[in-house]
Length: 358
Ligand SMILES: C[S@@+](CC[C@H](N)C(=O)[O-])C[C@H]1O[C@@H](n2cnc3c(N)ncnc32)[C@H](O)[C@@H]1O
Image 1 (spheres, rainbow, N blue to C red):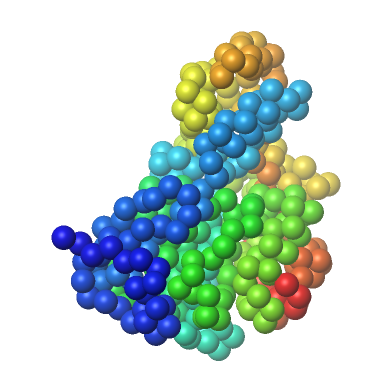
Image 2 (image 1 turned 90 degrees about the vertical axis):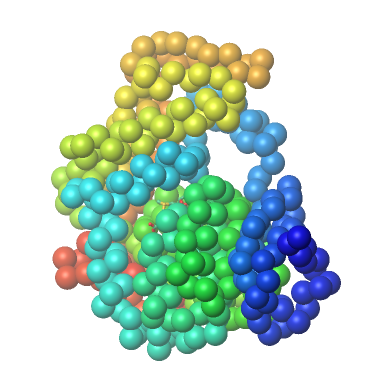
């Protein structure tokens, strides 16, 4: 029989972060209980997911509005997560390879700036691919991947656990746009936040300030945060990155309509939409939409959702920043800039920030 740890049994483990060597099943601390088959007891899932009723209400409100806009987090069901991984390999999608090449050059500086024995907290961890570069560099005690896509995150956490058996991994299923508590076992450790991939660009500038303020409060004064930020550049390069010739970004966008239909228990007819992505140089933002090719309506949970021909559902914004613009957002969010690095083309920035007020 696997052992089940309760919180009270765990004091020694939590103080010293020692690794028990038994196969263990551990309960989550909040929300629905998720059983998690583990080895050595150093992989524990924390479930802070929004409740399903909240999701239905939010979607009916978003799709019923005259200007329809849906949160980008709904891209990421299992298929959406796979399609995003495929996007990162596309020749037009320079972001991932540029950022990863930059991290390769920063190993010594990041090691010196962060120090070992910390807990690395990754916001929107996805494949947990980039963290592997930091794990080699920084050698933290614990890693907290935070993501809304539960099954994808669990799968990646297990793979990471196999490859880094001494690392304590606490996957946390949460919506990063809302405040959530970090797992209790990392409470006493120095925290370092990690938010790569220019995911910060999915927020408007004011939302980015609010997000950073929440991160500052969660991590605490003096904690550091590494953020990847895509820079403003030639609109042809930007538009190509979001309109790839293989049509993977289009499939990723259309998959969201399928996912929304599943969440609402109806068929939202993804085949009646097409993918659009345009860059607005004035706001420095790529905006992605699903555009209805014909008028149609759907009944969901007693509500009628109507789409007119040519109507657009906004699915994602990706704001691009000059370094000084982002530094100002970080300042407003309660951080000071410690360092800023860019690639040789000046296409992508990595910032090291420090919480000055939480
Ligand atoms: C664009 S991927 C980035 C993954 C990875 N950090 C990278 O840089 O390649 C965004 C990830 O954030 C997650 N995500 C998106 N919105 C989220 C939200 N509101 N809360 C938690 N996770 C979210 C998605 O599930 C996905 O894994």
